Image (cartoon, rainbow, N blue to C red; front, side, top):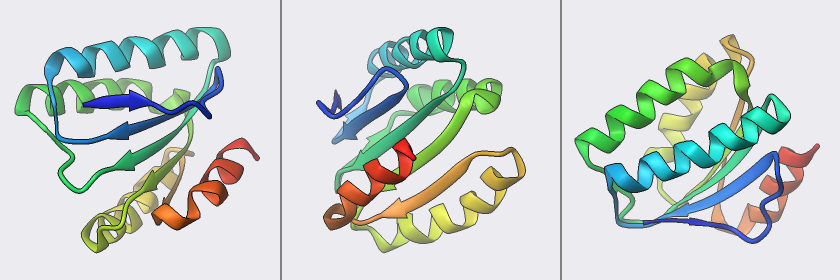
Length: 121
């Protein structure tokens, strides 16, 4: 399930992901991000990954396809999770993101206010 966070703005979108994301949910969120990109050119995202967050194969492929075609429209991505594994993956991915001019950082749940401030700066 994907739920939009109330702190979201037009160009800084926060979501919380819990459980398995379906293809329909993924397509709905892609449409939300496309709408924000159409209005602002670039967007930033805060993504809270719950303990059981995951994607089905089709939803994951749809997400990856969208990401590969919209990298130029992403400014910053803040991933909020307690998982040490995600923290390591994000550290590696952040190096790639830098190459395509996307800021990406890991935050723990107790740092969510810092994550929002970083995205909006």
